[in-house]
Length: 131
Ligand SMILES: [Zn+2]
Image (cartoon, rainbow, N blue to C red; front, side, top):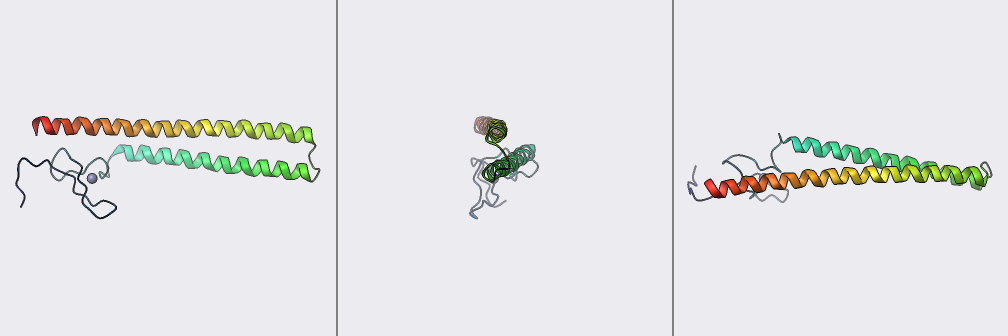
């Protein structure tokens, strides 16, 4: 290696989205950082949470379509006000359930990111202490 400055901490060096090299400190030279390591299991967890989210938004779309249909049927006299009211309440309950699911998915994602940061912090501290 051309750069044999031993006091320099090893960095990831992978290309970032803007084309500049990534400067995150890594455990050993040539090792990718947590964000650029394709083998990280957290990435799989994250895409699982993205899948959960898109499933939820598909449900929201379905509930909205259902609500529009109820409103249309009511307007055209195919439903009476009482039935429409009950059906709309049902849609409301479904929407609330979906919203709670979405919050849970977001919470899980934030928690995963926090544990990633904590892990990285521990690694960097070890590098600084013994590196
Ligand atoms: Zn990196």
